[in-house]
Image (tube, rainbow, N blue to C red):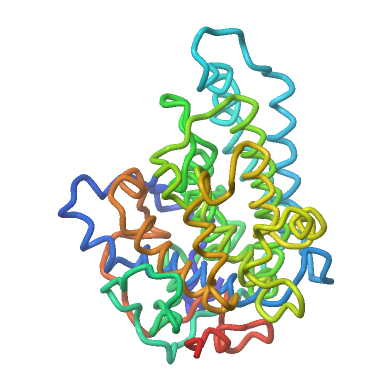
Length: 390
């Protein structure tokens, strides 16, 4: 590989793979985290997918690449394991111990699954380079997560800037997958606590971000990541949550957006921007949700909530009920992005277990580098569409 591309090589015969490790140990570590390259890259990745799915339904004709199909097949294989490890009889109501057996299977096979995914996928030739970015670095102060705010985040995050691990040719050494494997293992719930929460959802998002930084996912995959891979992941973890009765990790009850998830609401609201008939006030209507949940992730998530919670929607999902009063999907979307930063990425209980490595380092973010998934040189780039909403 030409070292001038500035991309990480997953083949490195001389360097030892760097397994990610915890860097957030106490509240004092939160400020370095918010200014880190990892934080900047993750927000850039999330926003690039948000922009890519605006106005798209699940049935929209989008490109599904070989890598995207490979990730979906991997998730299907993992979902099939659940039939092999049915819930066991136990006295405790929540947290079935059989989940530990399922997760043990994941620990055993994760490295092989990721290696197979990478070896069977075609990387761009040559890979997409990093380019200087005109976008300013993400502001470090977080505005109050008010959903009826009239504007989107005022600045965009610093795009992905892959560090250079090796410029060796692809055939020079073994496939190094320790980092994406580590995030994959963190993304399915905790086998000790028998719970699942937004930190696990974040870990899967970071797993996909790693595939982008390694060159397997490219700008044209943006829509498919959010509308093909992520719904398949949601199906898998919903099966784990209900089948093994996993506890919500850090749930805020009726004051939280959802017991387990957040990102699907962001990308799902982006899908509905500009919809001619579905307004935010409609997602509390049972018939509207039932008729459209297969096309829009936001409505699919609402349907999932109503299947496990009973009583008036305003009582069991008060935060979402309040969101239904926001007049436009653009404001819902921008408000959810702010809320995600404040309530997930910048909350110590959520990110205290986050892992940092060479792909997503704790070091301070470096401005002026271009996201691999939002390169202005690539025709699929939609980053320019993330201007503040008026």
